Amino acid sequence: MDTWPEDSVARVPYWVYQDPDNYARELARLFEGPTWNYVCLEADIPDKGDYRTNFVGALPVIVVRDADGAINCFENRCAHRGALIALDDAGNVENNFKCIYHAWSYDLLGNLRGIAFERGINGVGGMPKDFKRETFSPRKLRTTTLCGLVFATLSDETPPIEDYLGEEILGRIRRVLNRPIKVMGRFTQALPNNWKLYVENVKDTYHASLLHLFFGTFRITRLTQGGGVLVSPDGGHHASYTIDKADDRQSTAYRDQGIRTENKDYTLADPSLLDTVKEFGDDIQLQILSVFPGFILQQIHNCLAVRQVVPRGTGQMDLKWTYFGFADDPPEMTKRRLKQQNLVGPAGFVSMEDGCVGGFVQRGIASAGEQVSVIEMGGDTTESQATRATEASVRGFWKAYRERMGY
Amino acid sequence: MDLQRLVELNAAYARTIDNEQFEQWPELFHEDCLYKVTTAENVAQGMESGVMYADSRAMLQDRVSALRKANIYERQRYRHIVGLPVVLGETGDAADVETPFLIVRIMRDGVMDVFATGCYLDKVKPNGTGALRFVERIVVCDGGRFDTLVAIPF
Image 1 (cartoon, rainbow over the protein chains, first blue to last red):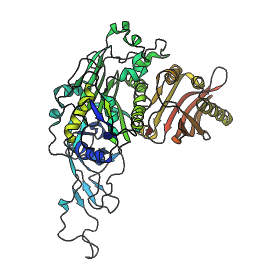
Image 2 (cartoon, chains in turn red, green):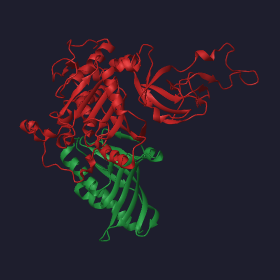
Image 3 (cartoon, rainbow over the protein chains, first blue to last red):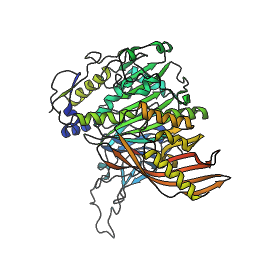
Image 4 (tube, rainbow over the protein chains, first blue to last red):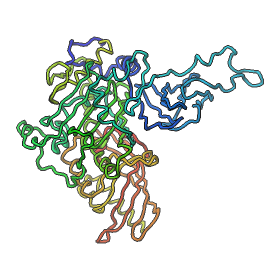
């Protein structure tokens, strides 16, 4: 199962969503390979000793701020017997983490510092005299920060984040994360599908206004609006965007195609939901951006969030949502964001369907491991396009995937 | 606050949703209201976001029309088991009330799963006709992990 059936990024075999060996390979080559993985926000750990636990693929990690203000990341696994070192999602420690199993302790850089009864009791027992503490530590990850986002990598070969992303994607991140943020809430959505089906969905500009009626009817985004998709040269990262364009009101393209999302009778009883202000100095009303392999930054009107894809085996994943605003938001902006958050998340007016559609694919392909999906809208290439009626960024994902997986 | 009236309000609320009479669900709220579905952890950390958030009855009606006309999801319904309300405080004819709940989700393939548990943090008071209605209903879920999607309100 480790050969691609056809040498094209427009054809993807379904076994990639099912095969356990392929999954193990993904964890090793993608998440634990030369990639940058989102682990938390700087705002999550502002002070010394503040930490969060998270996952890099299946690898449990601790992200912690040390006394120098640096952010460290290391495996959440005691060097002794392998137990989790930190059990909570977040917290604050004074100077060290202590494993609850046998009280081995670690400093804020992840170095093994203390071994309970290291010299035994009354000279009896204890660790051998030649035991070298410094050679036993959980694996350390390098960290980097970008606009308040914290990324980690296990590989020495991962290039600096700026090179990893490229100028275009970098600019799109800086556009949104232009000042200190304030976390407004967190939710986890457990999805019944392989992690890649969600990542593809995020990159799939073609489906957005076809699957999501709310998008189409209220002109949050329609393929007939201005916009496009940027794909990084390696294919792995993307940013799609729509531009608020008043003359779209006249377009009948959707009705002409008899597409379900056109519904003239559907109006909001409380239109304040979509009361939007332009806050980034441009006309971009929606921007969805992904960083390979599993990070998403979202601006939908004034609703801002980061999403993290956590794989949980071949057919399950967690989608971790963090909603945020800016630290300097006035109360009316906070209110606006709270209302617009109805658009996204597990109960989102425009994102709810993304929670189930991956499961529909996972179930649909149950017996089709040797068949392929067809990803050919907009051709079979992966370059940026000035339309969203394309699957260029989905193909981009597969380009990066195949390159990194060795297929 | 008469406990009997609170129990009746909660029973009507659960029945409205479980029997899929969603159009009647906003009627159980005052026009000026707050309905939010969040988690115990977000509440503990002072975080305001909800997976659903409505600050008017009209927004609740929009939830219902989205549920009926816009959103796509696999056929499902809920069974609410609602515990006894505890009155936390009273001001005039309004009361702060806390009530535990459990929601079983019944999927089209017949699977019945515990979908959410938590407590309702309510502010209730009578409307013009004397019927008890919600000024606020904050749905505080015990956990923060939602399976697949949340289409129907809690």
